[in-house]
Image (cartoon, rainbow, N blue to C red; front, side):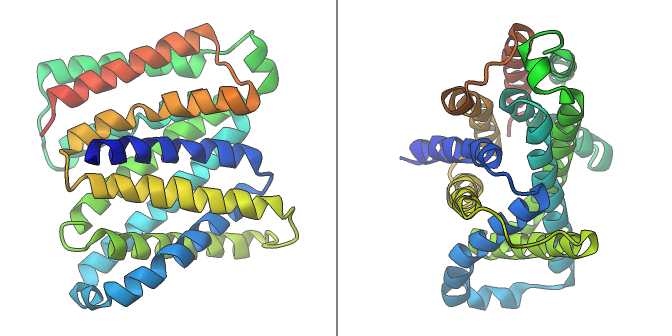
Length: 289
């Protein structure tokens, strides 16, 4: 049952690319709508059934959660922008580099050693990532996405921000339940997003009504049934298991993109993507809990 929930979370999270592609909202507005609708769904339960837990909050937890929320907002913003310039398959596979960034941060900050086999898999995955980033030139995909390199760069940036908010959240989750942590996380992310909207003077309203449906889909499927169920699964599986299953996200996303938009990545990207998934999986297995 719990394994089914984990795969369900991965499938639901993969719909994020589809809803983002369907929407014609500016990325910053799409992010604000997604976070606001998510909080409308989540906050009432948290405030009614988990309100006593807010007493556990201290200055350190608030600062870490706020920083995590800022990184989560930048992660989603980079991800949405990446999808405007590159294909769904390439963007989602490059976001998997989160695992490698986490490994680097753990090595540099917490001095967590990496085995010899782990280093081999890390290097191989970096080589595979290079071929994903450089792939697509001279084929149909290059005509559809003339600025694909920019999109792929933004996908790598999304992976970096994802790694940071994951590491910060892993620490905070030791003291807070999932509903309280995610409510605070999304609230901080929304505040940062609204500040950016105000500074850039981007209109909040006046868009096609269909965009509200796409934003609701992002909130319910990708966030509530995606990100939140991932957090739930960490209580029943080792983090290595969750990270391994999350590698199916690019597969689900690519299949949905093919069905919905007819997007097919180049041969080089497909081969490099498969190689990257297996090398990251190999690293996870070498360094698992």
